[in-house]
Amino acid sequence: MTLLGSKKGYSKSDINFFEEFTASARKQTQVLAVVVFVGVIAIGISLAILAYDIFRNIGVQKDIDNLNATLASDEYAGLELRSQALQQEINDKNQYYYTLTEMRRIVDETNAAETELANLIGDVIPSDAYVTSYDLTGTTLSISGTTFSYYDAANIVYMLNQSDVFTNSVIPTVEEDDSIRGAETTPDNPIDVYYAFNISGNIVSDVVVSVGHYATTDSSVIAISGITSQVVSAGSQYEFTGVNTFTASGITYSLTSVSINNIPLSEQEIAIIQSTGTLTGLANENVEISLYYAQSAAAETATEDEGGIE
Image (cartoon, rainbow, N blue to C red; front, side, top):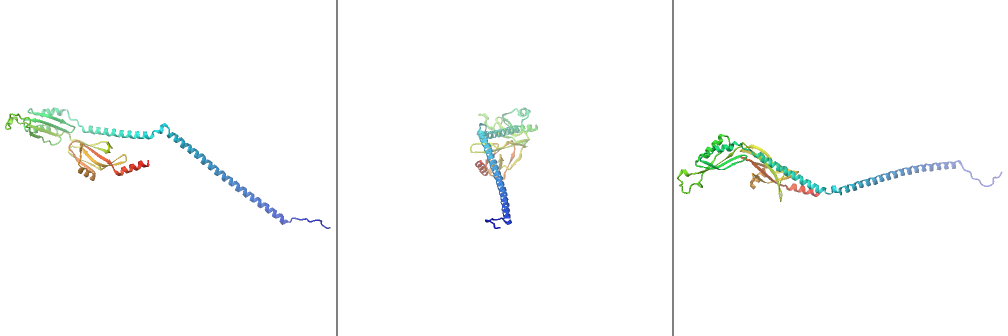
């Protein structure tokens, strides 16, 4: 029997090709889905980080705005002025402390004499002599007067020493006094000869040596330490080392001048102290030492640098 028309058939190989193509397309679809999924996750994470940064920056900016508003408030507007006022208050209190230590020094140097001393002096003054001046300090007794006898002053010293008034060897000064000689008398008349005497000596065995440190500026002198005092034996030597520089409140000062009992030392004496860093002397009486300093050049430069940084 004859077949009419043409009819194309599919072989087994064709069917296998279609199956492989379909499987490959399915795998590609799965891979693409995974890539898209990973991309979506990555984008989501990036968006989450971006959102976190945005909200964090908003929070930080809000904190900054709140801090600026707080600093601009009346409570904080005058902080700089308050700081300056507090610094001045600290300086004033330091000066007050230094003043108190100066008063303490005066108290330490004031040794009250026994009340019997005045009566004793009255008893030892002979009847042919009289006292023109009488000076009693914390450490020294000085008596000046006039007498008819050249030896009265020596007798007065002897009787005072018998009562242990003086702690050092005292030699009175006696001079003939012509100022009270009668106008009509002759120098050869021994009856009208008068003698002026002076007796001076230490009445205590210990004296006080005090030291104060001061900074000098163009307009003022300020204390940079309290007054320190020490008790030493009368007539002994005192010594202070390391006086050529002094550090206070982190600032180093250099020694420029010294005064002892309000008497300035000479430039030569200052030069010796600056080179050795040592101040020595004899404490025959109460000694008040004032050390004057100027801020060193290195310290001034450091202070200016710190001020510029601020």
